[in-house]
Length: 170
Length: 170
DNA sequence: CTATATTTTCAGAAATAATTGAAACTTTAA
DNA sequence: TTAAAGTTTCAATTATTTCTGAAAATATAG
Image (cartoon, rainbow over all chains, first blue to last red; front, side, top):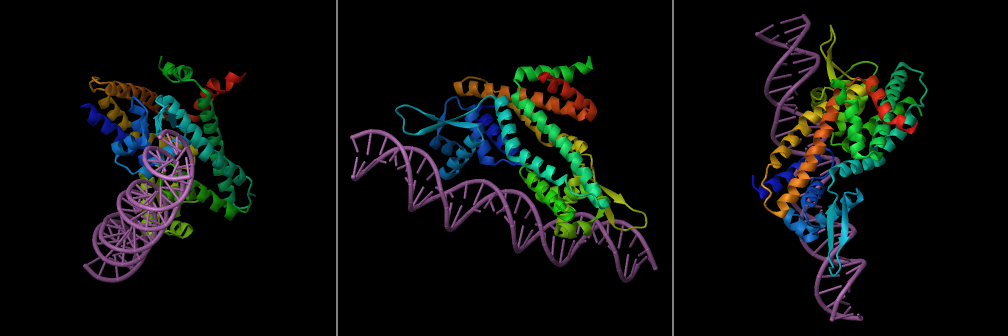
């Protein structure tokens, strides 16, 4: 495969994957484009490359910056703004986990705690409390794990996982 | 909070969370409803409870069954079909990871492998290969981890994570 | 069989989300 | 200042996804 085709395929694949995870396609495509760009890019280059409007580019660049996945770069003697992305996919993953945890998981944990408190005076309420308790327990465990992963260095983490999982085979 | 309000809130919260993760709202709501139901439910009860059409209910129940999150139950002497959901949230999580891995992660890994092969004859191509290689490495690690988690029993896994993460503090 | 209950399908309608493009706004340089 | 370059906003449009409702298909009982 030639470079141009590979680049196109990567951007499309990243965009498709993202929509399946509730992230908008254009945002993921801009992110993909910036990740493989050797230099930071200005808005017009991004618009041209992805064939999107200025408003769309601007809005999704802002979202990427909100997610901590892209950054502005100001070049001296240049009036335009340039953008670049975090290229270390490990840091990208950590950033995504961190943001989703903050925006989505934390509020759900709060709701679960609230729901655990209902009086269990009917069979339905008993069953409800049981399931909510179970979800809450697993969710808190997952949240704690995510939190630990966020703090971890990659090499350290890989080694730990190696110990936990791979060594079982030996 | 009274039971009815708690139930309503749980179903809505679960539905909202799901949309943020690329899962359709109704599917998540049916799943939530079945998880907290003491008995399996027929289509009409689900329709009435969630105020949705028969077509919608049927379609999303089928999707839930495809995902391995809900099941049909045939009661003797009953012509209708009844549905129930897996209530152990740990199994639910494992099932979701398993399905997403199969449907989404595996195809992406295949594309990445294909893209790693391009000739690196320009600076752009070099940068591209670097980023793709990095993503591929992390994605394969994540995939292997997911695979290990799928095989794990909860108690065993919790203990292992405790060893890896919690004991660090001591 | 035939009638009835139940489930499935799917074309069109409704709802939701993403995108455009142009006007408003901001910044910089002369 | 003023003009030009660049950025942001947002109402209107377009695209996508989801949902409905009724018809078709299927299953069961008499």
